[in-house]
Amino acid sequence: SLVAESSHNIVAKTLNRYFRKNVHDEIPVPKLKTTFFDIEVDYDSSKAFPFADKAEYPINAITFYNEWEDKLVTYCLKPSKVFQGINPMSDEEAEAICNKISPDCHLCKDEPELLIRMLDEFSKCNVYSGWNSELFDCPYIINRVKKVLGEEPLRKWCHFGFIPMIQYKTGRDGKLHPKIITPGKVHIDYMNFLILFQYQIQIFLFLQFFLTLYNFLIFQ
Image (cartoon, rainbow, N blue to C red; front, side, top):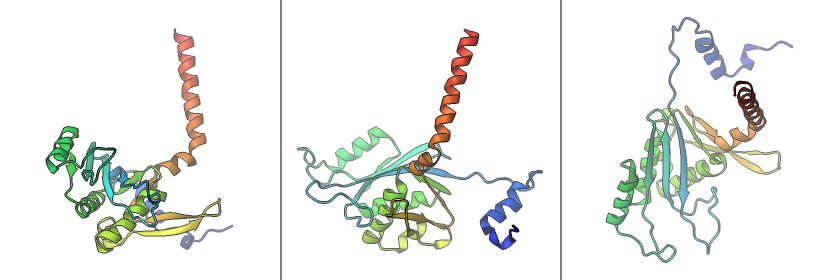
């Protein structure tokens, strides 16, 4: 069957036109800035589990690994209440712990400051990835920022001043699953990526093991 040009995604057509056929290096391929991230959230065992759609509990820490800088960056809050019998620590104690961990571990005075600095980090990257970030981290961040700061600061996350969106689609299990849309940026859930390619990865690891064993037996 014939395929019309209009059937192709405009992004795919642009990439094909300017990069796939770029045999003479007329246009340099851009180096994308990739970051990996993970958040931590307050939890009260007497209350419900922290669900992403409600985002009831404060985000108390987030760490980025900025691949283009080869650097870990953390923004965190000190414990706000008695935790496992340990009294709340002073700002000086918390600052000393952060400095001991890394010069790039930053103590924030409150959650609004942490959220703003977190969005500043997201503004630097082109591609961002986390573990189970499609189901939890990203929707939790979006909903929590809306609660604490409002919607406008979220524009830092995307290019061109867009606001991140959460679209829900029905999965194979019949449940609604979130899909994060951040215009101008690419999100990859590393857990979904691993599940998608788990069999190829297993075959690759098996072949690596077989070749290693073969070389050992032949050249020992």
